[in-house]
Length: 161
Image 1 (cartoon, one colour):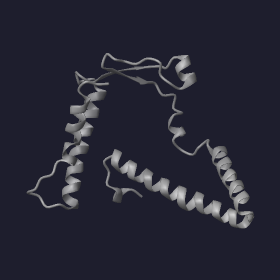
Image 2 (cartoon, one colour):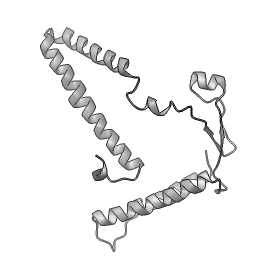
Image 3 (cartoon, one colour):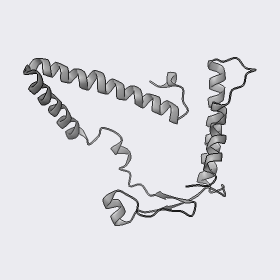
Image 4 (cartoon, helix red, strand yellow):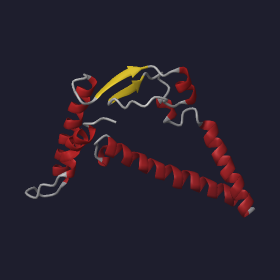
């Protein structure tokens, strides 16, 4: 999409990917590398928002009616200029469980009914459904979300609660 983006991304993440054999490996060295990468990313995003990068530019506009109705984008910008769309403030809520209670309820009910059909023991299927939902899915997704947040935000996992 952007012609200069691969070189910018490698330059931002370079402190994390390069190894210096003169320094001994350890937590302090990793934290210093993450701080340098964080500062590079912060400078890049600041200059991106200020439109001071020549080869990486963007425009902000509203979605057309059909684009918002179908929740897609119809136009592909081959001119090297990115397009950011105005947010109505509702897109962040789709990441959370807020508003998805019925979907989660239907999933748990369907799982319970399928397990009840397979085991023909309601108490055992209820315990098994709870185990699958709570222990396996919730713990695994929580662990994956923490790893994803730590890698994307350049924060060490020990700082996440």
